[in-house]
Image (cartoon, rainbow, N blue to C red; front, top):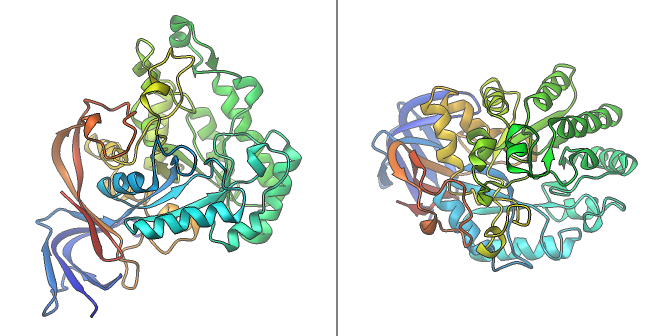
Length: 426
């Protein structure tokens, strides 16, 4: 028998349309069957009183690194999906940088089978663009797309050979597939660990100039213009690169871009005295860059916000800064960090939610991310005003490498629903 649930007294937000109203949403089985200010709970339905809290589409995190297969000591699909549920993420897009990498169908299918067995949040997979991320020979993009790959990327690796990237873009365009690139000139960026500037000089650390990202973006934009192919530039960190994207969009190029929640909230000063939990790719930039990225979210130039969830164990992080691994976990902090922008008046709630719901769904061709009759019943109930302090030891990820340990936050997930079924409740 199909289960019917009615979420009453909810502040319902549809990020795709900007609608924001108080009313009721009804789910029947795995889909939304009714919603609106005048909708009432059907007879016999299970009633959930939302008490005025925000009910929105479940978050879609477009950039999640997991350790399975190959580094299960850092994170497994089991622990990652639990962290995702706690964070209100109903669909996580797994990067192909596993061991072995997702550059062939068998590894993609293994991850998909594992996710189906766990049956908590949705798990989609990106395939590799080139075999073993070497930037030389294309991986079997067509076969992986047929097996369910939602996009293709080499993660943080730059495809140095422009001819290889041009060929991959043209092939992807023929298939209707999306390529996701890491924009950087690796020769200019070199071994840069932090943003080039006063902070890098004071710390005596190898630095990455802003122009390394700009040159990478310029190269990718030129190839997008040449091929006409859709391309998503995964992680911007600088105002100058964002300006190039804005100009390309104004000229009608089929480019989109993303930013990590950490780069919207932190800057190079947060590194302090060699705090390795703040070592990331790309590096944290200046406060002016951070503010420009926030403005990019508010005005829509930036399409997507991601957690860039990158688990590392303590041995990898508790090293001298130059030897420490990059990355931070972020599935459980993606939403509260975005809510900081709302509380500060830097962006409105539908806008920030659009960047983690309907927009990534549009780019990846997913059915989720919508608040419409017939849409999948993937939802998140949010208490906007609940104050809390993040304790890294209480994170549900297997690794605890967060830069936000001890941070005072306002707003959190209180219920996560996937396919009409509650997978987390506070």
